[in-house]
Image (cartoon, rainbow, N blue to C red; front, side, top):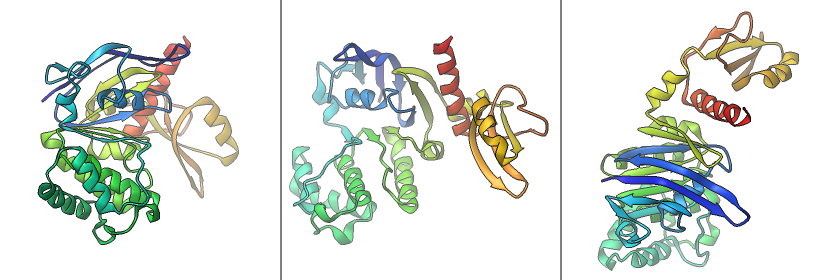
Length: 294
């Protein structure tokens, strides 16, 4: 099982590029897509989900060009877009039965699968309530269930934990981790801790380009010796934010404890800190922007 992205670019009307020369090769596991707004993550996922076509380049699913034979991928695809919508007058059960029919599942298999998924996303007790009365987090859980209806080999999820409470986020992260052994899971999110918890590899995008694609351990090694903990006075914090890349701050009685990503010690008293994925991500983005500016 392999998904190959070969020189994919996407240009929108007005000459704006959403993606430029994207090259990735994905095998079973969870790949975390990270990047700021406008980095190209959603554009890439829409192309992979055969919702839109690239301007240049191609995507191969097990060696087959998905632009020429989209059904080869669609039959084994699960997709949760960021702007997932529901039919408000249908119940959760009716909605999932409808989508199961669209995906070609027979009625008996569909009902069994829906029962399993409603339990997984903790909606079994509201299965007969109209979706119009669901909260945003509950609708998101319905979206997660529909993406898993056909037991997909490729699962693409865009901001899947948005609107979920902490317990639900952990439940869904665990589910993705369990699924990843036998399929390719692409997880796009702004919540770095979700990626840090389950990703087997991470792709960082910026301005429509791939900045890096590496295992979490390699990303962490890239910022070893470049992360610092420093205590500054509250009045000095704005100046520190202007001068340094700060990945976190915490107020204490002795001042503000800040995490700084910098090649050199930011000041007297700053101590080396153990890097996190968020530190590595911010370093990647800052380095890319510095390169563009140069």
